[in-house]
Structures are given as C-alpha cells and as structure tokens.
Length: 196
Length: 210
Image (cartoon, helix red, strand yellow):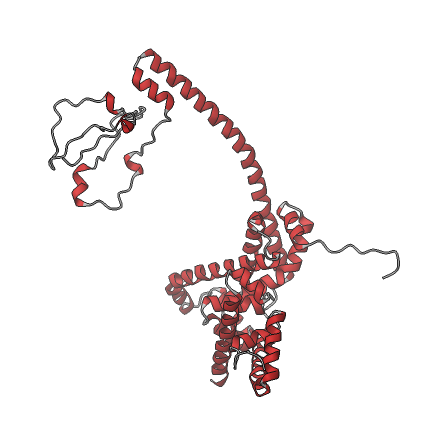
C-alpha cells in the first residue's frame, strides 16, 4: 500500500442485510453476490434439482430479509441465512414428495403415452448428470434428515461445527456425532454403489 | 503421563482432524498422542477418512445455474422485498387511524349506552353496566363441541342467544329472588351465596348438589 492511501473496508454483512431489507438495491446485489453460492449448494444437495434449489434460495433470502428483526445476531448473517435456506429446502422437498406421490399415476400415464415428464424425471437431463453426482445425491437422500442437514451445512455451506450447532440449535457434541456417522454411512453407501 | 482416556471417541478425533476443536481440547488430543504413539494410526485413519469423503463430495459440484437464472432469482427477491416494506408502512399508518377510530367508537357507544339507560331507569343494572365492560358471549355458530360427557348433556344450552344482540348483564345475589323454583332431576337446587365476600359478585346461577 502506498503511504497516505486508505482503503475502505467492505460493509459488514449485517449492515448490507439491513439496507437490503429496507429496499437498497445495491446492498441486495452485494449480499446476493456474497451468499448465493453457498446457499445454492446447500439447497441443491438437499433437493437434487437446480430449479427447486433456486426456489429455496429465493425463499430463504426473502424470509431472512423480511424477518431480519428476529435475527438476534448471536450468529453471523451467513449462518442465519443458511439455516433459513436449509429449512426452506427441506420444506420444499417434503411438498415435492407429496406432490409427486399424488401425481405418480398421472406421470406414469403421460410417460407411457410418450408425453413430457417433470424436470427431475427427464431422461435427457438425467443423462447429463454424471453417475457419480447421481450416486452422491441418492446416497445423501438416504441419510436421516438431521444428519443430512448437518453434513450439508458443514461441507457445502462451509459452516464450522460451532456455526452448524448455532444454525440447528444443537450442541457441538451432536454436530460431531452426526457428521461422523453421516460420513461413515455415505462412504458405505458409495462403496456399495461403486462395487455394483 | 496424563489422565487422558485410553482412546478418544472417533467423532472427537474427526473434529480434531477438521480443526474444529478449541485450544484446550486440541492440547488434550496432542498430549494423548504423545503418551500413546501407537494410537497415531487411529488419527491417520480419521484423516484419510475425512479427506476422502469430503474431497469426493466437493469434486462433484452441483450444476451451475445460468446467469439468467441467477438474475431472475435476484429480481424475484427484490420484488418480494418491495411488497412487505410497503405493506408494513401502510399497516403502520392504517393501524394508527384504526386505533383512533376504535377509541372514538367505544367512547360513543358508552355515551349512548349511558343516555339510553337514563330514559328507562334501572338503577342496579345501570350502575353495574357503567362499571363493568360488556360480557362477551359466543354465538352458537362460533362454538365447536369437542367432547361432551353423557351426564352433562341435559344441562348444555345450545341455540341462539335468548337476548339476541342486546347487552347481557349479570345480577348480583341480592338482586335475585326465587319463586316456585324446584330442584332438577338430580335433586339439585340453586342457592344464593351465603358468604358476604361473594354476595356482591355477579353470578351465573347453576344447579348445585343438595
């Protein structure tokens, strides 16, 4: 740095969030740029679909900013946002499962008649995904919800054990245990798939 | 030699490998390793396990949305945020107006009530009504009976309020006299409270065990 020059530190996440919630477009742009990637990765791992993951990201940002008063600042804004996004993703997943169960017969009839199928059952799209990604997604879906969420918040959301504990309102010991068993099960399931 | 356990649980070692333990716990694990070099294999197994599973996971990144999809997502958020802000402000202003209007309506209602009772003097009732707020009662279509013991079925009154929309004022014990009232099928009879402390309290009269 040259003598006499000063740099302005980037605005803190909490300040940006307050400005964005009040309608500041530039603050929203910056906040979205900072957190869209981890939010999307978490949502995608929990849902396995790009479109649904984007819906969960959108829903999560809206809820986080419209309920900013509930944010007690005991954790970082990122932790708060990822908690809301992961909740939104799990809710969306439950709704989608119910919807799919209800529409299952109709989907089969349409597919047999040569019609179109929903995005996540589209054979062309399925083919685009690598086998490994599909295997990972399927293995993850078999984990209990609490383990899945803990694992994804840590590995994909980049949250520390302490931040995951704060986001899920559980102890650090529980985070340790869930992560350990989630990794163990994923490794076993993937080993089975690879050997098949 | 330290007092550390013979083995730490594997999830604890995994947390150590992840760099997630605090300085005190890290020091505990390191002391344990120094005392039990033969256990280093356990730690190395954890290191390999954690690295393999996370590397495998991160190697398969989710498909990236197009910039158009990101743009639409950002626009939808901005659009949704505009609506609640407007609604909150509108609700805040409307709330104040509504509060003032409600206060005025209550004042007028009490004033008119007071005037109407002066036209038809009913000293005891008027005196009570001026002190006590209106007694809210549910209409029959506002009540859902969840459970009804069979023995109480003949005591339950259902249907329209016998006084319609009129105000309902409860009498005090000393304002009530019973003429020709007999006991009910169970032999119960309404009794006035004998305790002076409760005599002044407005009452709902109900049968009581003889």
